[in-house]
Image 1: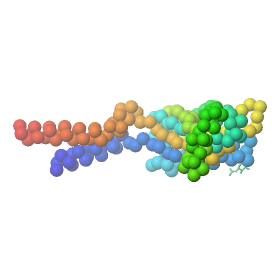
Image 2 (image 1 turned 90 degrees about the horizontal axis):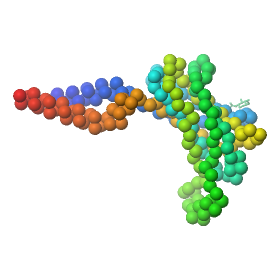
Image 3 (image 1 turned 180 degrees about the vertical axis):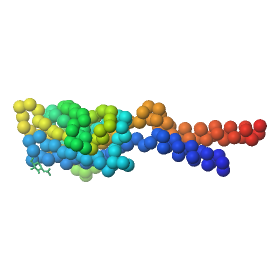
Image 4 (image 1 turned 45 degrees about the vertical axis):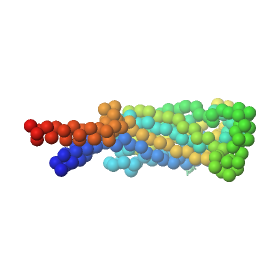
Length: 208
Ligand SMILES: *[C@@H]1O[C@H](CO)[C@@H](O)[C@H](O)[C@H]1NC(C)=O
């Protein structure tokens, strides 16, 4: 019983020390009445003390776009995605801008797919949309906490056409420092082995 108690206490302490890697998912609703549709995803209230990512950790923000594989989107081709991390006072902590487009599939491949998947497509089992995932931000969280993430779509130079979207969301995760990361990923084996080790030590000390 002492062993169980020690093991549980130990596991609790380790948990406290490691903390949880944060992961926050927020749907995005772009405002398509703007020339450059933008959206702000508030992260506040996501985690304890209103701070989604603790200071000193690396935050990674990924953007997921679900786009119809329409002729329109294919014609638009590439467009620009801008992402900003915003501090509570409205300042920009960091910003990034990168191009994005539907993954290319040539006409024969598309026709072939439509032939093969005809029945499932009609039955709605598979869809004619494409999920584009990209990492838009990666930065170290400092004293200024990230209040929100702003994402903006911009058409490619010389055009005003914007891609059609079904849905969009951002996914924010914080990486633990590597030591903690290791313990977190291996926490069960870590607990088991440490408990076993303690148990054996206890047995030896009792026997001796
Ligand atoms: C969308 O953008 C327009 C033009 O800037 C603005 O008037 C409107 O309030 C915005 N709508 C939302 C829901 O943010």
